[in-house]
Length: 197
Ligand SMILES: CC(C)(COP(=O)(O)OP(=O)(O)OC[C@H]1O[C@@H](n2cnc3c(N)ncnc32)[C@H](O)[C@@H]1OP(=O)(O)O)[C@@H](O)C(=O)NCCC(=O)NCCS
Image (tube, rainbow, N blue to C red; front, side):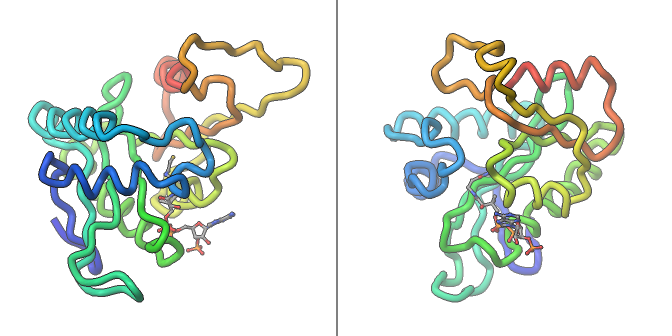
């Protein structure tokens, strides 16, 4: 699949080292430093999950490459991952993670629009959702540009500090965050998305 500037191919083990460079880069985790991949095995696990998504769901993360050079980035450069995969309640989850050298050029928006078109082609009746931390405006601006609207917002206040807990040290359940969807979603799906953190 391709867009004006991007070449999108199902993420696979052949992309492992390039993917790890992006996932191990502290700059791609500024909004959630604990999520950074410190071991290649973490990225391998994620890539294998993407391969499984593609074989079981017919959709999953893409490896994202440039069709033409953009500034310092050469033609064919791997710039990150993104796309749709099935989440709770059978809904699509839209996500992306791109290398900082590619930011601010509308490339994530181009990727997100391609993912929306792909979701509609595969299953137009399935909502597309996105979960994003409040401290990551670039990410929720991309969701908004792709046509998703804010459906829920959790803003931690002094009075509820610590009321949301998880045993997982990497959980985002207690962090201010937002849930977006491209259409109205029912309370059951919303609650399942909230529970993901
Ligand atoms: C989020 C991310 C994919 C955005 O990539 P990108 O290619 O720079 O995105 P785009 O250029 O398509 O669009 C970003 C938009 O956010 C806006 N934006 C960026 N920083 C912003 C800020 N601090 N406040 C408000 N808007 C902001 C940009 O101005 C742009 O909008 P514009 O085109 O109207 O000017 C990229 O920053 C990234 O990979 N970050 C690290 C990983 C990550 O956060 N992934 C998402 C996890 S939910």
